[in-house]
Each structure stands twice: as structure tokens, then as C-alpha cells.
Image (cartoon, rainbow, N blue to C red; front, side):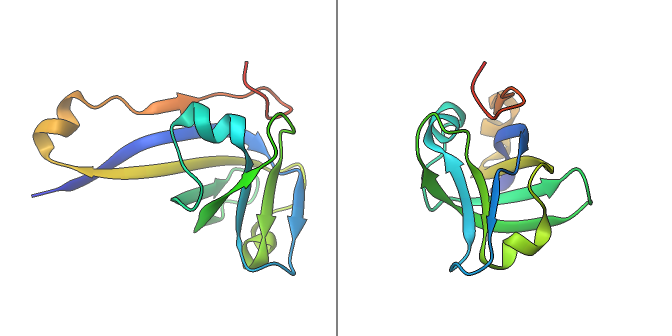
Length: 115
């Protein structure tokens, strides 16, 4: 049996842009993606701390060092520039693996840069 557990979390980043006329996704600064151990096109769960929205989408690589967090396509309706998000991914593993697994948690500064 496999269970899903938290793989990684990017905590309290702020939306820097929204682009409704796009195919959909979240653009994330690649410095944050790498620090969290994620990869472009990976599915993520997004929580908007400002309005309570929860939704899933996938990662698009953003330019390094820019602090970009962009909601694209339909996701652009789920938040506004300045809203705080938590970005999470989950991994499947056996209960035995899960007992020793430590998720990677990233806490960027207020400008979405690594501390």
C-alpha cells in the first residue's frame, strides 16, 4: 500500500503577477523550485492565505532571482497580486518510508527570495 505525504512546501510567498490569458499554471522562481526539490511541470496544491482558496495546478519555471510567483490561466482568478500562498507537493510512499521521511520546507522572505 502507498500513502501520500507532504514532499515539500514553499511557505508564504506572495503573488507578483496574474495572467488570465494563459494556458494555466503557476510560474515560480527557479531558485525556489530548486530549493524545495521540485521540478517544472510537477503538480502542486496551492493555498491562498488571504481568501482561503485551494486549487491544483502545475509548475512553470520562472526566471531565477526574480521572486516571481505568477498565477496563470484560470488560476489567476484564485488570487490577487500581494496575496500570500503556500505551495505544496505530495509524494507516494509506503507507510514505512513515510515514518522517516522529512519534507523539505522553504520559508522565503517577503520578496520571495531565499533567506
